[in-house]
Image (cartoon, helix red, strand yellow):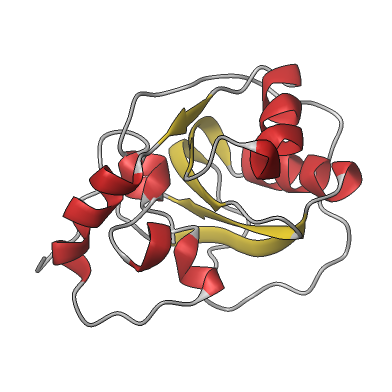
Amino acid sequence: MCVLVAVYGFVGGVFLGLSGVGRPRREEEQLDQVVAQGWAGIDVGKGHHWVCLIDESGSTLWSRKVVNDEAAILEAIGEVLSRAQQVSWAVDITGTSSALLLALLAAHGQQATYVPGRTVNRMSTAYIGEAKTDAREGRRPRGSGHRAEAAGDPPHRPGR
């Protein structure tokens, strides 16, 4: 799911004021860890998005379904920025479905990179055999390649 985030450039910025609101934590997420650089891949949808943040080793720091609503998106941005000092953001769609998301990222000094389907498709060969799910889509666009890894320098994935 996080492939989109890691392919293109780095974006820095400090975001103050938002914090997570009492959601249950997932075991696969590394908690209470702030990394220097994170990659956030977003699988954009009409009703909801899936956001996945990974670190330089490719480990998932945070991954959630986010309703396409201003409050929910702001909460997600706060969660991501509380876990990484710098974040490279990547999205798979730049149309109307992502308009609110992109506007809120820009309003908070964050820049998102669009990762075209062709790039994602070419990355898919590294992830053969992994099934498509919404949760994986933030990490990997449209069933192929990791979006987070598409947002900048891809994290090293041992054995792949």
